Image 1 (tube, protein in one colour):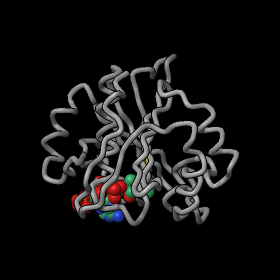
Image 2 (cartoon, rainbow, N blue to C red):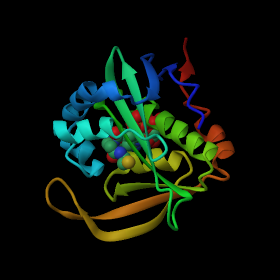
Image 3 (cartoon, protein in one colour):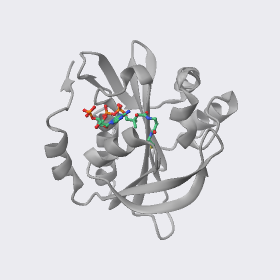
Image 4 (cartoon, helix red, strand yellow):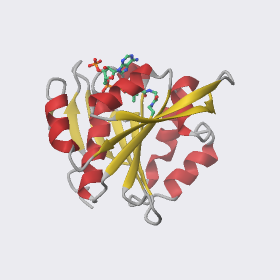
Length: 199
Ligand SMILES: CC(C)(COP(=O)(O)OP(=O)(O)OC[C@H]1O[C@@H](n2cnc3c(N)ncnc32)[C@H](O)[C@@H]1OP(=O)(O)O)[C@@H](O)C(=O)NCCC(=O)NCCS
């Protein structure tokens, strides 16, 4: 697994600096603070109640990059983005990885979500995954666009599969990408808004 390149420091479109690196066991308190700062709407897809200390404590206690690789984006000591690559090692979908990304509101629309997803896709390719998926609720226009900018496309819709924060049943859209070809395509697609690298 090629994680030696981290930490990576980069400058976002609006000039803010962030450092990207895998989560470590000492990130628990900062991660909890990050999750608690998110609007409910932005963390609903995370499936567990990440505002609970015991949930976050479990994440950091059970770190296993081969199964879940969490990349954090950090600005001035605070976590401002979290992106995870989920894999299973057995069964008929062991060639598939799932990506989940969440970025603090103040840092959105700056290329950070795309950049985090791009690093995870690159990692997925390096560990031999063939296919990536991302799940969004039908009305999450921003999330869907961010995935589509990386070449993901809607592959399935599960009707009424999730309840949103208002208890309303919504369609779950599964976006997919064949990553055996994605990296080359992605470089071209994000070239116009890739952040510049700092020290
Ligand atoms: C989805 C998410 C991670 C995107 O993060 P981000 O840092 O804003 O993403 P980017 O800046 O890389 O945006 C990439 C593109 O997505 C689109 N986009 C992002 N947010 C958008 C919004 N609110 N409305 C419309 N388009 C949006 C834009 O096309 C944008 O590019 P542009 O602003 O240069 O035109 C962020 O909105 C988020 O954390 N949402 C809540 C969590 C979530 O829904 N995660 C997805 C499920 S895994």
